[in-house]
Every structure is written in C-alpha cells, then in structure tokens.
Length: 218
Image (cartoon, rainbow, N blue to C red):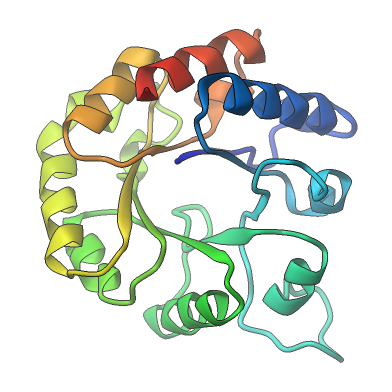
C-alpha cells in the first residue's frame, strides 16, 4: 500500500488535485501498486469517483444528522470515500475515540489507517485490528530524513509489535521518505507499504517521483 497524504499543501489546491490523482491512477495501473490518496478535506468530493482509493485525512466520532462541521464516516462512504487516516501526528486524538473510529470504519467496511508515533503505540493499537498501522516519528515528519535510515530499528520493532497482535493489520512506514531508496529500505525492514506527503506532493515532477517510489515497492 502506497498512501499519499496531501495535507493542505498549496501545490495540490483547487483543480491541481485532479491532475495529481490522475497521475497516481496511471502509476498505480502501470506498476500494479495499490496507491491511495488523502486529499485536503474540502476537495474529497472532487476526486471521489477515482479508480484508486480516496481517504479522508481525519474523521470524527460524530453522528449523521444535526451535527455541524464534523467529518462523518457514514456520509463519507455514501460519497464513495474508501476510508480515513486516524490520529495523524498533526491531528492527534484520544485513545477512546481511536478505538471507536477503528470499530466504526470496520463496520462500514472502510479502510482504517491508524497513525502512531512509536513502537509502544504500534503494539497498543494493533490490538484494535485496524487495516494499517503507520509509524511516523513526529520529529522526522517533513524533515527529508527518512525513518528507514535514521531509525531502522524502529521499523523492525514496530513490524514485530504489529505481528505479535496476530491480527491482519499491516505496518506502513512514514516520515521523511523522499527517495526510492528510502522506500526499498522500509520494505526490507518489514514495512508493507508507505505513508508519504511532502516527498511526493512538493516534488516538481509528480509522475517521475511516484514512478520511482512505485518501482521501489515492486
């Protein structure tokens, strides 16, 4: 799994998101790699009919009906959104809410990508059986320093922690990934995919960098 979190980067604003998603669709098909995109929340509807999975960057434990300003999972599903990131380091939530959201997405048959900051959280939250646990040390996010190079033992330990839960959860590696070499190293260390943001979104040539990452995965 190759997930691109677009955050709220200006490079992806307005109709640029359409070009970005079409590029990802092409690369996914060419290299037979599963690519998912998490666009800015307000642009989800613009690309929700994509042939690749579209994820929300955050969802709320809020109900359908008279609730204002919340991202409601049930309504996202009706808009053909495939799942969501949960507990990203830039949008942390409490453990009780995490547990509720993982269960809710599972009931809705939506993809849950639960972000954690360390091995202890990977071990703790893998017991909830989300589809993916993405480990991202906060200090390396957006740094250009890949966790696979800076802290390789972290990925190995996280992979063992996730595996020990004996659930179907897969580990993703994030934070600072900027090259195909970073991707290859993450896979070698036990990751089943990557969660990236600025390394792709801020690149001058999206086709080239997505291709480089995809090739490194296969």
